[in-house]
Length: 424
Ligand SMILES: Cc1cc2nc3c(=O)[nH]c(=O)nc-3n(C[C@H](O)[C@H](O)[C@H](O)COP(=O)(O)O)c2cc1C
Image 1 (cartoon, rainbow, N blue to C red):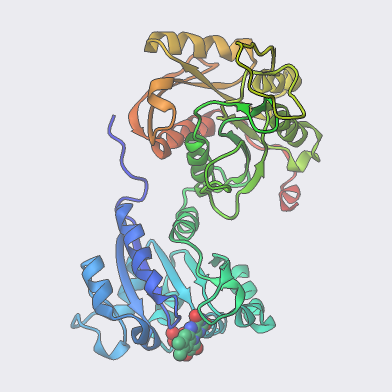
Image 2 (tube, rainbow, N blue to C red):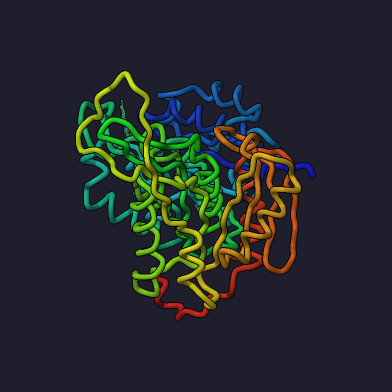
């Protein structure tokens, strides 16, 4: 099986306006291109004061549109042609001035004209001084755009070029990319609530030592990103990961836990105790939950002794099995588990199938520890209760995530809740 990048061939018009964050737009263009997108840049006159069109022409291998009056192709109306060509129009960085003009439907620059003329999704990533961003008029303008279906990528908080601290820094290239992908669809998980567990857990021996495992959380992160791109509302319950917040969209609700008991509590309250409209439709247990914990964690650091010592362990709760048991015969949430083995593929497949009935789950993803742990790639075998067996040969974890979610979309029940309840 060959795995094509989901973004390959997507046509992105990048509108660059006159912000000090213009230099980041060059990196953003590259970010889209690295994922297989074809990028064409259109700039305002102000933006050319911050970065030269030549930079974008060189990076994208495409001409850059700046002014209506220097459009190059005879007979073609450049901004209309760009607007029709786009699969998505991304305005990044978007100035307060541009946001205001967009909200009023003005078309005095090529960027504004493309935004007005396109039928493709529009994504706006503002970047400005915190007081400009928080100004009621700017907020009103952004809300007006959002109400018309424009995706607003919230700026980050931090030190700003103007010397102020606060919200106004252009969102990361990854965030803008993820939100653009989501806007482009297909949104086959729109309206679905997906809860994903990720990473290892830590079981304390004493205040400075713990038992854990080599899980990196990358599979769970890939699943969260893919579910988000496909329109789901995503919650991620994760154990300790390097760098703190996992590299998922700012729209993903991240819940950080440490031990298996904390993870179990965080997941089970969300699955069973939350109001019905907030309960997940799909739970994917990608975390490597520790099977054992020290029976008697010490309150004080255990002193080193010269003699050998032993540690007594208690078995942790099997969270997936508990979810299966508590759900019983109900169809929701759809439960997806992982089975990790260290032997041969046939052992993985039989263990995965065994887990389906033993734990009362709907889909099990079998994989080998040597393929999966700490790696950016994986190969998996996906089994479900209807006897399906799909082998996904070694590929990036985001592609594995896509294959898993393809199976989820096939197997998940249609939603029976009242439509207005989704608004909560
Ligand atoms: C040095 C400098 C930095 C600026 N940075 C920003 C900025 O980050 N965000 C913003 O909204 N405006 C910023 N401005 C103001 C805009 O450039 C100005 O509103 C301009 O008219 C925007 O034009 P445009 O929206 O057509 O690109 C800056 C101006 C200067 C001189």
